[in-house]
Length: 347
Ligand code: AMP
Ligand code: MG
Image 1 (tube, protein in one colour):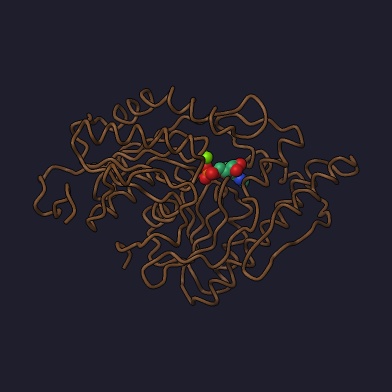
Image 2 (image 1 turned 135 degrees about the vertical axis):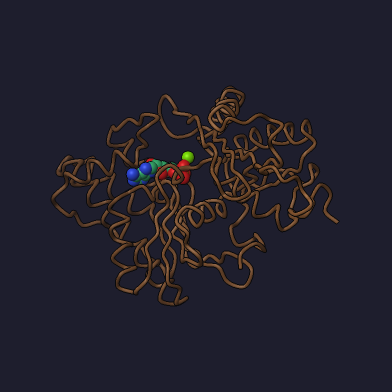
């Protein structure tokens, strides 16, 4: 028996709400979502390092510092209070240990204080579920592209299966590292990938770069090194390099997505994750969808980056199946794979 769970019809008639906390990496995100799928608020505060990439402990310190402020903002925007919440959902993994632990601590404290169920959510599943909620995709092949993950997935026999993935770094990481090497500086409202996209629009010349698809998997580290080396020669403009990097990397993503679509014979492509905001990538996938008589769905920009709403929503889906996470089983799971999750709520 699952403690703390009651079938929906036995619960109060007032709207049930899930509070979601997302802290897998640089974002501290909080979302409040109604059990009917209405997103009541979705706010975040991002850790921007002085220089270099994300240092997990520094990011975790940032999360601990802003937690109370961001949670309060989520309630203010939704016009709700703590007592309106029915469940606490949190990103249990995969992600950076110190960051995940900060979010999990906040989630456990809130659930214990309010005496309500806690639901640990897989971050990758959440990116898919928010994409489905926002676009009404039913059974898509999903390309999930972000700072930490690059996965082509589709649902089959109870789980989101991984059809292809990166063998080394994620596409978002590849773009971010190149951007930093090229001297670009991010701002909270403008991620490095978005800066690369902006410059790529002014690029004209396609520079030859290594294209690395291995079966259904991808490798971006050789592509990154080659692009960095060419940058150092000073022979090509940063605009042309951004353009060429995008063209090659996104063609690789498009190739394996197209193969997964052809193999599974699904009728929808869903693009989700932080890099989904990229218009050139959207354009390439839209063409593939059209070629295969499929619908192209892209997650709206406000739910593309890591966010609390996606955690809150996936927590609801799990909870309604009776899946809750007792405190003693709520330790974070740094390498929790998408295809380890039994997604019993998917029909
Ligand atoms: P996430 O890990 O889901 O929060 O996504 C963050 C990643 O998305 C970072 O690597 C960003 O650089 C990347 N990103 C955000 N906007 C864009 C964009 N317009 N084009 C490409 N990458 C982007
Ligand atoms: Mg992020």
